[in-house]
Length: 468
Image 1 (tube, rainbow, N blue to C red):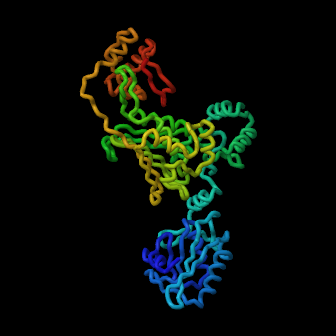
Image 2: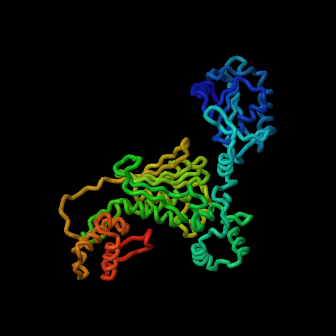
Image 3: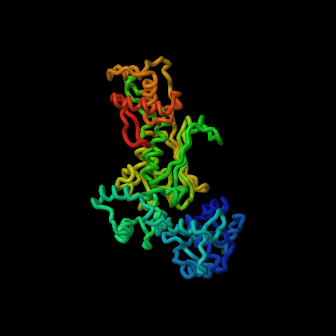
């Protein structure tokens, strides 16, 4: 490094990657600085630079002592040993600045000799003083994962039918009747701890009511009027709970029922297609559920506005992952157990690192924000304005009735038109839109099904309607 380059670096001032020292004499203080850099993103310590960034330098005669101090601090006063690089830059007659480059650690967390874990905090450093921060450090070093966290739930909290169906379809075996055998199986499947309690992955995937055990790990969805968040004014709102697959299905149905349906050149009798391909939200919701930071006790938030849809996940991108890298298909597994079960068919998961790319290929109008200070990752899917042709449409319900050879009532025609507009509409919503009781809606739907006009695809909650 040359003096001019060093001067330009020092002129920027101290930050989380740069520390100034006029001189060093305390090996423990230096070790703490090295630990803080190694546990964070790495950085440089400039020895012989004033707090104001002046290149004062240290006497050439001090270089041997300083280098020995650096070596002792990095090898004997930290756990595990760290290997910083040094560069001596001449800044004046007989004066030298020692540039110590500390790499980002690969064996985090690092401790000083007193057992203290240090992290960078802006231009300063601070102690790690919470279990959450310590767990995150272990998670970043791939020594610990949040989905392995033990819970207080035992195998009695399992949804036995859901587990039975999974075992039968994937392993072609029955659920064990013996509690001991079941416990051993859950451990082998990485769903329970050695003491027999379900871990977080076991609860999220197979517990009957996960929200009773981990109430914070749900999706909270709101459809707002306009383009701003309102305190009390909203068009639709729901909290999605249950095992991950149910949360996924219900959240996807919420999004799709709040999308516009576009005829896209089809005939008026044909079902409209969603304004944004459903594949986009399949990929983004799976990504949010599988890759969120479960060490942050917060819910995923799903906000729908007139001009955009936001999915806000707790936790910023892990390690050195950036938005540019995820756009290129790079990925870091934060929750390997959840990822493995998604790959086994528990969620529509199509491969590590490819979900964001598939979403962008289907709908390029997607932005990402990695908020490291707020510990949030936000995906914004932009909507396009819906244009009206201004033409008066024929009564679609009447046309459908003629097609199947049935004379349909006004209410039945209205039900068909609403279903065509929104295949995910519920009986309660139909009742509010058409202005008749839910009982009348159900009676008319029963008649329409008997006539072969409409058909229900999937369960009552999470499924959708098809007009024949």
